[in-house]
Image 1: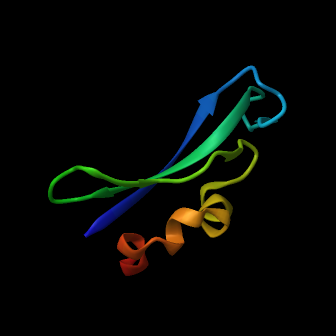
Image 2: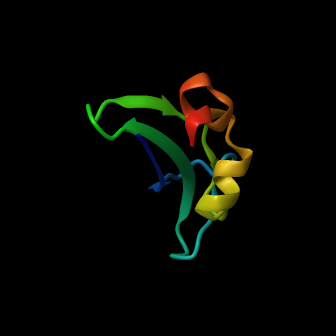
Image 3: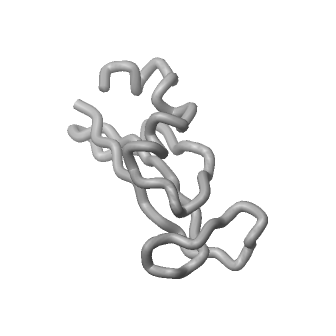
Length: 71
């Protein structure tokens, strides 16, 4: 079983970040982990922080990796 989590990471680099709901400039990262071993399977490329997790998952190339296709 795999677990997907999206997390916001604050950054000062405004070329890749967007203002999120908390009014801070941040980027959204998608992380896929194996539930049994708790090891990271894949990490997505950064997306602007104003994307919600569902949209970030749809845009993330991580969902097209062989291990994440089970999701």
